[in-house]
Structures are given as structure tokens and as C-alpha cells.
Length: 196
Image 1 (tube, rainbow, N blue to C red):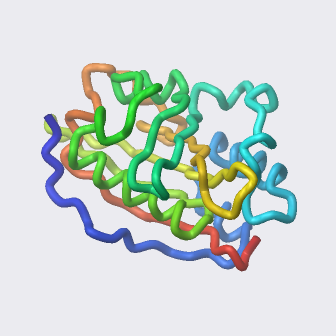
Image 2 (image 1 turned 60 degrees about the horizontal axis):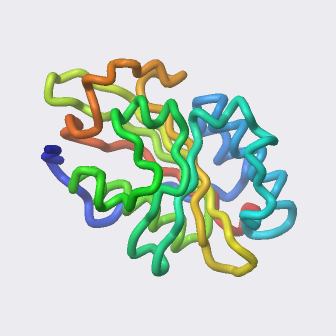
């Protein structure tokens, strides 16, 4: 089971006042493509409606994206869909499960802070960090979290992409799963509402 060395009570983050400044922080082209897609579907609204998003539009991104349901305003998160590359990287298929039921406690606490940042700000969040495993190897992890609504002002779902490993997600060793992460830290960027 995971023993996270420290889980912050709050995540410090940099708020960007322009889409280009936010986008400049993103390393992986798959994240940039998803952000462009989300931005196009959002149009002039704060966030797109879930009905605006169609996976058929982005077939090349499907292995690296997922969709989370926000339960009770962010009290819990349910994995509606998880892409095959994400499942392989984490060594487990989270589809159809609640985050806190399947993820190790330390990791669950950390990622919940990121998800709640999206719910509270109603803004995209990008995080870039490193995961250090018990065998002392280090893998990069990048997450792009994008809010979706269902005809309301509140965030009902989070559309996300995750790349674990090298910059292009080259993590292939299924024997190293998320259960082996002992630290997870890094940079968090938020696209401020006034920038959209």
C-alpha cells in the first residue's frame, strides 16, 4: 500500500491571466490538443456543457483522457471513463469506481485536492510533478483537468488527461504502479476565470 511522505493540506498554485500564459506551461502536445478542443467547445461560456463534448471528435486522444463525475460538490469523485494508457500506467482500471475506494490513501488525498481546485475555481488546472517510487526511480506526471457542466454554473464533471512517465508518457513498466508512489509534488497552474 502507498505511504505518501507528505500530503499538503492546500496546494499552492500559480493563477494565469491569459490562455496563452496558461498554455505555455503545458509540455505534452496531447494536453495542448485537449485544451484547444475544450476551449473551442467552451466558446464564450465559463466552461463547456458535457453535451458539447464528443469523443468521436478526438480519437487520437482517447487513450490518454478520462471523465470524472463530481459527487456532492466535490466530496467524492467517480471515474466514469478512463483511457487505456492511463489504466496501463497506473496498473489498474479505475473505470466505474470512486477515487477514494480504489486509490491509495495518500495519492487519493493529493489528487482530490487537485480535483477540488477545479470544482472550486471552475477553471482548468494543469499540474506537473514527479513521482518517486520505492525503488528510487522518478517518473514525471502531468495532468490537465478541465471543468464541464450539465446546463448549470457548477462543475458536474472533470474532463482530464494524464501522462505518467517521460514527456510523451513513455511509462510502460506495469510492475511499477501508483501503489508504489512515495512522493508526488510539483507545479500547479490555474487558468483564471478573468482570462477566459
